[in-house]
Length: 102
Image (cartoon, rainbow, N blue to C red):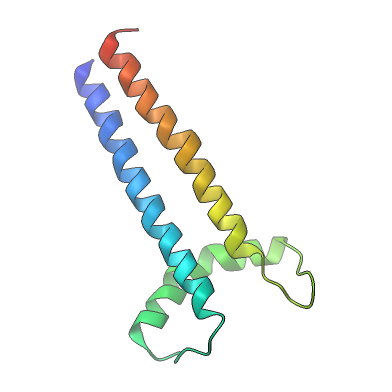
């Protein structure tokens, strides 16, 4: 069972890392929306290409309030934090239980 426990620990670590990186990409994208970035800049294009599929899906479902305030980055950040605290921690706890033989 230790192999499955190690696999779950590694999966939790990688998932936490991916969610953390995506969280910072969303934050960078939100900060860029406050300025007028060059749309041909490769970094700006990368940020838009990586984050736009999820943000545009949420934008269609979330209402705009107070003159066009976009709440989709906040919703994505809340979802990422939920996944980090629930899913990642559950995987880690499951791995610990497997190691202890419970």
